[in-house]
Amino acid sequence: MNSNIESKFGSVIYDKINTVRMSATERQAAIKAMRDADTIVDAILWVTSKIEQAGALLFMKPSIKH
Image (cartoon, rainbow, N blue to C red; front, side):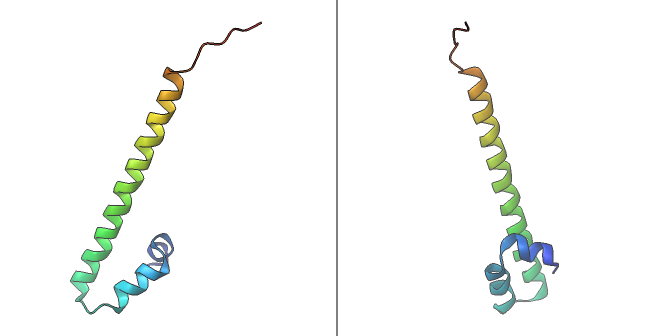
């Protein structure tokens, strides 16, 4: 397990995975599930920010310029 994963998910979750009794295969599956969940959350946040940006551009109120 590399330190990048530990820093990204936090040491508490990393410690929990290491303290639970499971095989190496199950441990790798748990880590993979965490990575997948993190990727999904990142994608949802990205889409949300893009929708907000598009909404700001599309629904800007016209202003009178002097």
